[in-house]
Image (tube, rainbow, N blue to C red; front, side, top):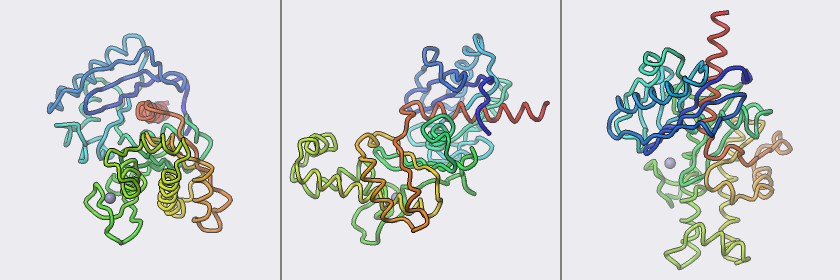
Length: 312
Ligand SMILES: [Zn+2]
């Protein structure tokens, strides 16, 4: 299913400190009409009401057919927040989809933020002509999303795509945020890179910005640390590519700009099975900070198209 350009939707980016809502027209966000509100703390009812008011406001100037919400956490097929809501207090257990549909009288779709970002890249971003698409988000942590035939791979328990917790080794060398040892995230994320550089540099203040500066100046140790980071990135990526055989791999997140894609493509090519060696296609993401909102709006667009088919 591709985007129906005639349908107007709203994409909502739900965060721990702010909620942003923006109309999505002709496959693009109308950024000068984006609304922003502070996220009410510890109060799901107030969050739902804030979202309702924002959409009602946008309804005054647009014929909105559906709304999509991008949020941290695990979302059930019924649009209920069932866990992992990060820093959004009071959000767990909320029946987001049904509550908002009742208030707004239009279709509401709710999806995990990483899955929304993947859908954005696969629908209107740099991977729009590819299928399946794997998104790898490299920031403080490491996450991702899998899009297959314009659909999010959610898994049996809605927690699919947690690629950051692939195990790279059994050395018990690095603890991961999930509680286990030696996950891909513990080595290839921004935090993982910082941990690696602390093994090479005595400076306790060493961070990724300092490291990148040294790398730019041609510092040999920094070059080695960055090279090792690319090795770690390629290790996990080759495992996921061998499992999924995606037509394109998109990398986004705060660390994506520091990756040398020629180098990464080569390292991954050396590690995947023979059948995939000439097919590796790793791209830098094109959607930036708006990816969640765009993906949510695309999801709403697809839902509205399905509604049209049922009523036609
Ligand atoms: Zn882990």
